[in-house]
Length: 155
Image: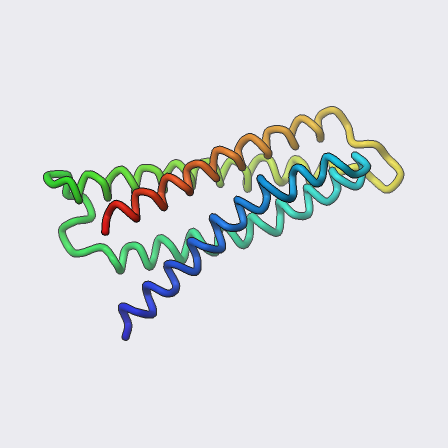
């Protein structure tokens, strides 16, 4: 029963994290381009902050459940195809965490600080951070999808 619960939590956290990233890239960001830049910038900053909290919660859950799901001795074993695939997946997870840290510790706070006041147009710096956020979010989405592919190949 414990294994089932761990798997459910792992799959739900993956779904929320990757699904959220897909939503941001395919729905939210293109939609923001269709509204007033001031409102778009403000909403982008709010969503980035809220999604960061959700994404980090999911990543922590994934790290814990992933550790619990990994058979003993396989965590750092690269002597087999399975071990190498798992190691590659772990590298992708670390890269996703680094990109997430760049977003959470650099981009989101800067956007919050530079967010336009009511009636103001977004500054060039704010728009520049928005482009960086879009790029890094796309990178994290690709990393997340590659992690899912690796997980599928581990079966």
